[in-house]
Image (cartoon, rainbow, N blue to C red; front, side):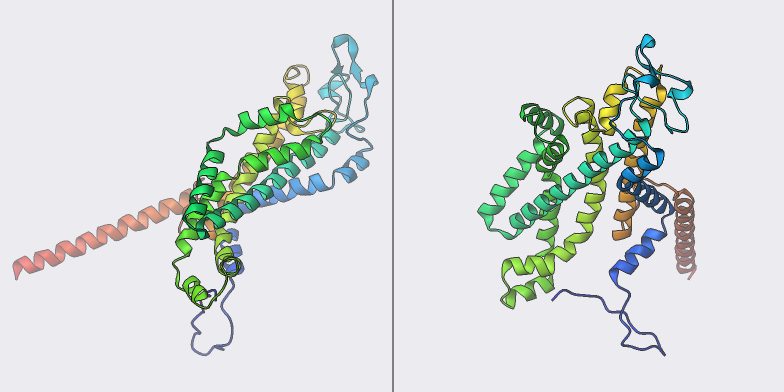
Amino acid sequence: MTESPLATPAAGTDASVPAAPGARRFWRRLRAQRAALVAAAVVALLVLVALAAPLLTALEGQDPFTYHPSLIDSARGGVPVGSLGGIGAEHWLGVEPQTGRDLFARLVYGARVSLGVALAATVIQVAIGVAVGVAAALGNQWVDQLLSRITDIIVAMPLMIMSLALLAVVPASFPRPVLVTLVIGLIAWGSIAKIVRAQTLSMKGLDYVSAARLSGWKTWRIARRELLPGLAAPVITYAALLVPMNISVEAALSFLGVGVKPPTPSWGQMLTAADVWYQAAPQYLLLPAGALFVTVLALTVFGDGVRTALDPRAASRLRIGTGRKDKDAATATATAAAGAAATDADATKKEATA
């Protein structure tokens, strides 16, 4: 039942050739945005590093948990021995103060925790948000009112305060990465539920949805076959922007001491222990902070590029790499407006003369 636009065949071409699918158009629009492509490459590299963490640490010959007391100067409070925090052939990025654990190994393993928590929490948020939003839009008035009020309560909840409260009361024996994932995913799904509900309500009145309803299709079959494909674009766009936000939340919770606990490496947990070492061992603070900054920036730029590629009518909010295009477009618009005004003036003058 879903409508699909058909391409008009040109003269001399085979009319049976189908139009370019939506996925091909999406990739073409995405490739036109150089900033989004660079951001996608950075994200892919980070994911590859996280997945290959055991291989990378094996190449270095280290692991993220082994202490090296001989590599720290206990007389100076645990500062790494050697220049630049103990950087050398055996420890590519140096070692941690006080513990002597390999900093490169903890950084790449921390990428697994930070990215894994953010991606898993995003999947939970999307699943709950889509289910609640579609159910509210397709249900009767009472179902819509109930689910909408629950969504309003979820949106009004302060994420950080609720996360702090929940993480503080759960026993320490529960795996912290799993707990942080569940807390973020179960608290922060309200916004996507609102987006899905609004989009579903606007799609309910479309012709192909009405035709499916008149054909006797069940409500959930209509939702699965007709509505969910149309919801893919806004859901994917919002999910791409949720991932960097979840990374920041996980880092903030770990920094506050209620997220991932040592010895499990996490970028936020590394920042917690590095706040007093920024002068003696600056790389201990700068490396996880830089990794967080690059990851969040790349995911944000890539999410904006996905949003623009899925909805070409919406201009990029970041304006990265589009300054010249915007200037040329503004110049062309101004020239066209000036030409139209001159044409109108000439026509008015001719009418007055006649």
